[in-house]
Image: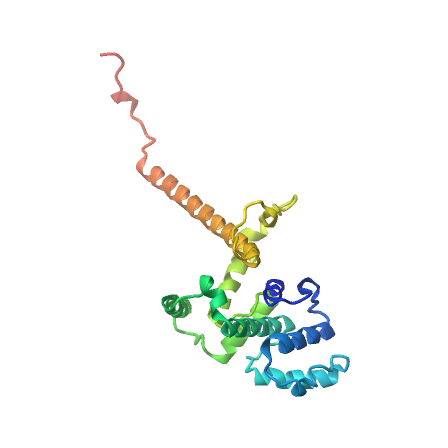
Length: 250
């Protein structure tokens, strides 16, 4: 996802960004500030340019995060994800007309707000009101668990908690542990001849992923429907037959 965001912003080498390398991370932050964010004037970016002196750069980066009002994030992955999202928002605000085809309407924004409220109500119901899901300790626990499972940061910690639950269900549940590993060559869905998003090649790859997830959801739904039909048939069928009531001939 970071690679796709860098590509959308026009980064020259989005595939070569190594998050494990602090110097390369610093170089990426500097590129985002120089080319997209431009929070500081050129003169005030001096410390961010000191990528060969990481002590000086760290001092400037700490102040930079505070000036961006970045939430407290621990890992480089979460920090870069947040900064990229901020840069993309600024890119949109520079020229919204470029994104009219994918721009969310006000009604959709209201729907998203209702969805987030629904997520919070569902989580509160699950915990039976015994845990305040807005407490700092709860939020910190969700963030820590998500980082251990390598789940990207999301501003709404409850949506991130849903992602954690899905990963645990799909990969760490007892049924998943007993599942036989899939062997063979993965299907090259990203190299198909069909184009999902002809007007925007950058969106083609994530849309292919969403299409596969939709197919998976439909298959799961079909399996549940089949299981329901079998259960109903077992209840309505009467396998017991009284042969004494049978007649042969007229």
